[in-house]
Image (cartoon, rainbow, N blue to C red; front, side, top):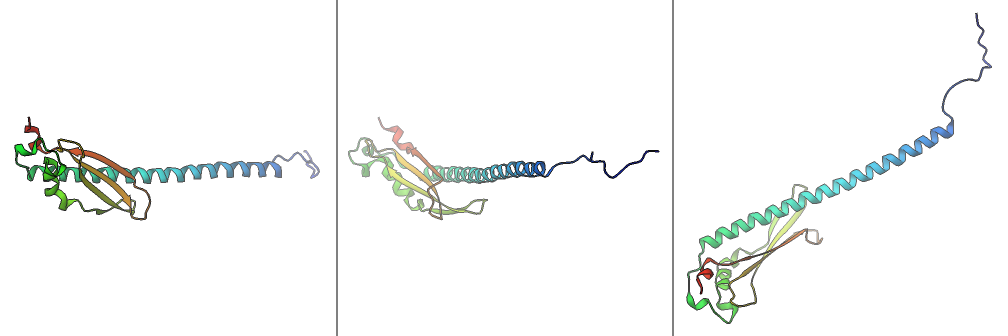
Length: 162
């Protein structure tokens, strides 16, 4: 039989320095991972808001298109080659749509509230048939706009000009 004496110091294990180094390395990896996760959450929130803003603009453009189709501007040959913007087809369309250009309040799935602002303006160059439509989606907290969009509308009657 073997006699095991308590004086035998061949005990396996980690030293205090090794334990402290492993804790420091683990803490570093965890902090970097948490920072990456928080950045990903912020970027995901911004992506959701931008996608929703684009959908709001698209929906409003479809409404504007429907209003343009319903409120047809009759063809008037005197509006074809005008010298002032107030006499063109675009101004006639603007007069019919101006009441619908008020900002509207929207709420994102992220909980933040935004204002969808649509500005209509006649382009300043002859033959004054182009109605410019400018959109801005602005947070209500005063931050800069998250999405700006510009497009142009030409009344159907303007295409009959020679």
